[in-house]
Image (cartoon, protein in one colour):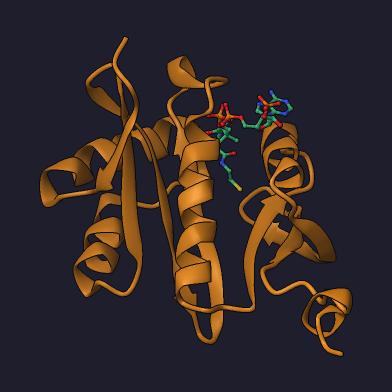
Length: 161
Ligand SMILES: CC(C)(COP(=O)(O)OP(=O)(O)OC[C@H]1O[C@@H](n2cnc3c(N)ncnc32)[C@H](O)[C@@H]1OP(=O)(O)O)[C@@H](O)C(=O)NCCC(=O)NCCS
């Protein structure tokens, strides 16, 4: 078993990503056309994680307006539970920090227990609910935020005379 490796998706990975989308998200999948257009547009990072020498998942993130946002995240079913999503999420948060974003944002379906477990573990907190956000199922989404500049009143002033 080799160490997982994170890299940018290249054009040759896009059909694979579209196929994984169909398997995982069914009616709500991003189409290959949408993926190609967005990937070419180039404003989002498309990051792929390889495990055992093969693509195992991806994350898409970047600015949505003035908000640093996770757009997509998936790990293929056979590779779950070994920390691959956590590795991609750690990169997402690190990139938000590099951009000096005050916080990082995402949406998650209220019934997605695996993802809720992941985001909660990484310090994301629910801000509000968006009703019927996921179509065609009409599932509510939780809007979650991770504060990247927590207010720490003791730190800067503690050393002052
Ligand atoms: C959600 C998803 C990305 C998690 O991927 P993963 O690689 O299995 O997750 P990891 O192994 O990195 O797990 C990291 C943390 O997530 C949480 N988690 C993972 N699987 C979980 C489960 N079945 N139940 C509850 N929490 C879970 C745990 O807190 C875990 O940390 P721990 O192992 O230290 O306790 C994966 O299940 C997936 O692709 N689901 C379908 C697509 C999806 O829902 N994407 C998110 C859209 S918002």
